Amino acid sequence: MSLGSQIYSSIFKKNSAMLVAVFGAGFAFEMGFNSTMNKLWDNMNRGRQWKDIRHKYAEGAEDEE
Image (cartoon, rainbow, N blue to C red; front, side, top):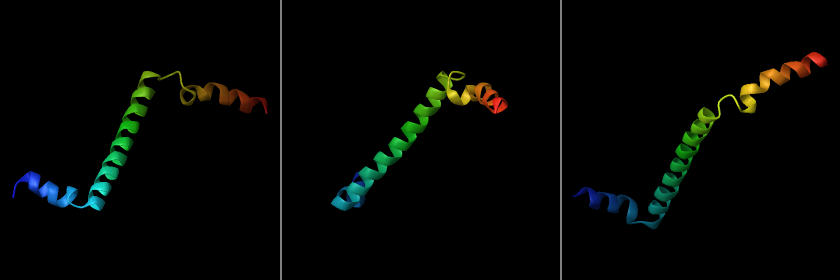
């Protein structure tokens, strides 16, 4: 039995199995893509985001109270 036949018989032969495979692959791709793009965005904008400069402004607000 060839690899193509095994894939067909296990995934594409039944509609329910194909739907599970498609939605699972889509979910995994979305999670990986979002994680990669967030890391890329954070690296490209390091020092310009609120999470990087919060300490400069948060301490001043706490001292005034």
